[in-house]
Amino acid sequence: MSGVRTQTLREMSRLNMIGLVAASMLLILPEISEAQQSLPIAKQIAKTYGLDSFGKIESIRYKFNAEFPGAKLSRSWEWSPKTDTISYEGKDKEGKLAKANYQRSQLSSQSDDTKKEVDPAFSNDQYWLLLAFHVLWDGVPVTDEGMQKLPVGDGSAERVVAKYPSDGGYQPGDTWDLYIGTDKRIQEIVYHRGAPTPPPKLVMANYTDYKKAGPLLISMDHHGTLDGKPFRLWFSDVSVKLTGSKNWINAQ
Image: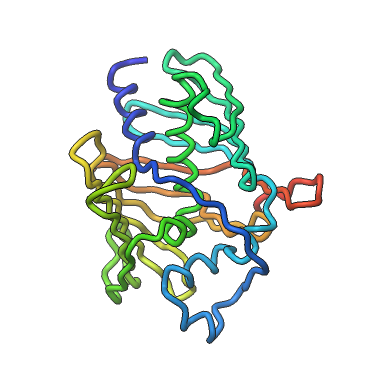
């Protein structure tokens, strides 16, 4: 791999590595009810994406794909939230097939590649997949700044800002601007990196091609820029398995 490609892959893998907290919930509410409107904005958004049914999820499968100047990548994951067990398949720095199976509670006993490359990549990819949940799970301060012009597309949306504290956390000071439609779906995001290194410092992207994978709502496609350079990020082969079932439900 060229130095440019390796650097760009590193940038993508380090967009955000915030720790995950699995939640056990009840039923999905497909509409934004009057009662839901009175909830804090972070919970309103998470409910739209299936928060109340997340406890029914036994496993999630997905392929993370990204394409930007000088590089292209694809890696497959299976995550079991209740046990925080992960299966990974992708390519290493030399382009060779790489696999890993591990439980995150036992990460310290894994290989350096798993600790330094695979698990950070999992955090990044899963954060993109379930961003609406993380804004709530991470417990960061969230402010509603009202209607604002969209940063990428035309029109306006409600800007909700999640700012991580300047001390503590994997990446202190990171800020996520979420642009929310009247349906409480994310339309676009802007990510401001708090730490000085590594890049990217600024990520802008839209959230499109929404599909349902069982009770979960997933944005499958994202176009935008990494520090002003165009990129596309998308998910494929997304499916979920519910507790007590042997069948996988494909996103559609």
